[in-house]
Image (cartoon, rainbow, N blue to C red; front, side, top):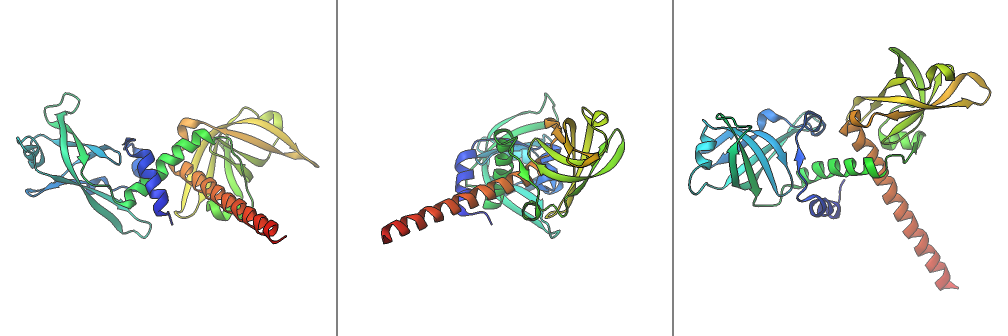
Length: 284
């Protein structure tokens, strides 16, 4: 569970950072775009969410609809923006955020669509802060901690939600079963059957299974290095560098959650060790 201190940190750090709702972000957040509405006392109307931060949003509406007619009034009424997301149990999570219209202009020079800038008049619900905060944090750490390796063992697999250390790498259209040795934001190392000279430099696609939620993530990359496995001539350790632009947000969030948790545990252990040492010295 995320703490109130972490939520406050996300809110303060990313308050004005705008998240544009691409297909990848909509899929990662499990948003239901069909259930997004702008509402005021006169009714509610469907809209398209273009982007949001913790301080405001941009939406797209039709110029022939009731929402537009309310917004072009001399004194537009206070409105509410409705968000809707699917949860893991199949139920939906929805909430309204009060807002006011600050800017209204044609969308891409269209006479039929308008893009509306909204300022939130209240802090967004914790659920939205947590979802977007996790996403933004993962994106930043994917750059800052790109090459920080996570050795794959029983404990790390459990915390990452990877059910087994076996994965599938497709090389030149041929799927091969591999053993995962480590992963990072930027790549992975696997033990694979094959000959070094026929693998190095080859483009690959890794299929990696995760749980909670269950998904199989596809990661494209290139084998950039090959190392021999002692005592075996038929298998090698292959280092894969992922193609950055194809790494999904979902994968980044899995890696970021692990690294963030590991860092917190290290800090707690260090604090406990320091306290134990101070207590021992005081007792002397």
